Amino acid sequence: MGVRSRFDGKWVIHPSQIESATAAFTPTDEQVEAARKVLAALEEAEARGAGAAQLDGQMLDEAIAVAARRTLTKIGA
Image (cartoon, rainbow, N blue to C red):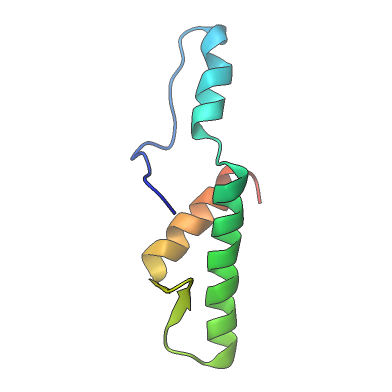
């Protein structure tokens, strides 16, 4: 899922900063698609009764699921 900032928000002190702050903290289409794929792979593994899940050779765990859910929350999904 790439390198992430450790921040979830930003204070702005001037209206001209809103657009750039919004752009910086809004997930890209690629990040959203990756998050959806992660959650789908985890759901599929759970439905099969599998004890582990992977996607594109990467093992998926709860930390990755949390990050995926956070990404989707940022877009209101």
